[in-house]
Length: 42
Length: 396
Image: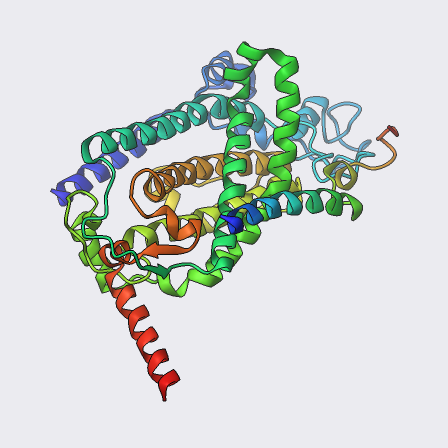
């Protein structure tokens, strides 16, 4: 059961890494499909 | 019987194709070749019409703007231009550099929405409810599949920690993906009427975050599982015997021989690998919008093989707008997702309440020896032989 819980923790860990990692390298859909000229800053 | 069925199918397909060819070309002489009231009514009635008379009638954009007649736009009149925009044939330049930015009109959206809100939700829902219903019925009839023989009190290691980790990485993420996927699809129909728009908005945003980011864990788990278990899931002659007696699932005391994975588990394995890969690829296409178009190419290959034509579907569209690529990716993602969810529901049932001793294999990795003998007798023999050999070597 420990392995199962460890895997579930890994699911969360991978998800958080994916979220911040992909945004850090500019893979966000908003960043990659719109030009700066038409997107107003937040 | 099978021959009669195939013959009937072929006749039906031929009849359908003959019916499609019998539709006479409409007379458009009264409108000078432009669309008629009959065309408009047919379109409003969602009938399929040959629209080449409009699609191809987009003037001559290359013609000089002062030397040609037809008004201020030279060789391309305003209606020509609008038709070109309508069919994505116009040379459009926009400030937005996104891949879909220069497609000003595409009509796949309503088709996609109608299918998504209609057959997809309806039949997908029936599939899942039907699967759960059948399992409930199976449980009522067969009950829990118990270990038939006397328990030995000894256990055998069935899965190592890394195997269980990969299984749960994939399984845990799949359950989250399935739930959030279903929430996204059914939310508008079932959650908004009960909890309201505001509550669903929070739920939908959270679902999207989970669905998008947890997908990576699923893909990692899928890859690990494939490499760890592929060799043991190659079909062999024992699978035929297993299938012939229904795996012993239907009758007490029947235990066909099997190696580490029996035919039923192999079906689950290959379903997960093939459908899971397909879901992953279409998911990546959705995750990076317009970056990974694949349906136009796939349709072109299918047309070359003649598969859609064989089923009387005619040629599939080999040219798609970026938006249509996304629409097809979403539908395919959901359809394959529904099928895999149904299969996994069966897997979860048999691995938990459906069979005594099965959960231990993925729980702590140790299974009761009698359980192993009943469901994987050839594998137990292999393990015992290895243990005996190891003991002999140690003694020497």
